Image (cartoon, rainbow, N blue to C red; front, side):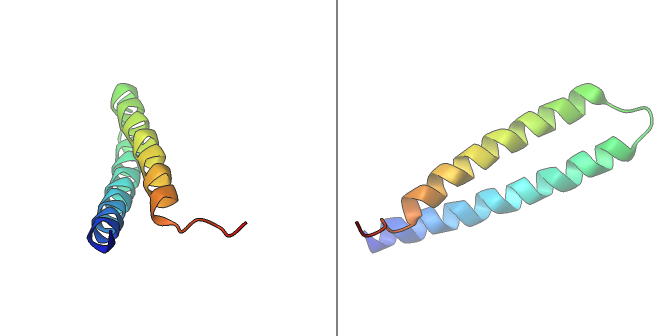
Length: 67
């Protein structure tokens, strides 16, 4: 169980890093002229999917609250 929790925690860190990288990429792409709206939209969609994955994994790694 402890190994699985460590693996989930590691995956959560990796996803958070990828999310931060996407934020930076979106910022850079948004500053370019002409604006690549389709590219920005795709990156934002991927970022949203990552945020959902992060939320699911975070819920799995957090201990259950006592009743």
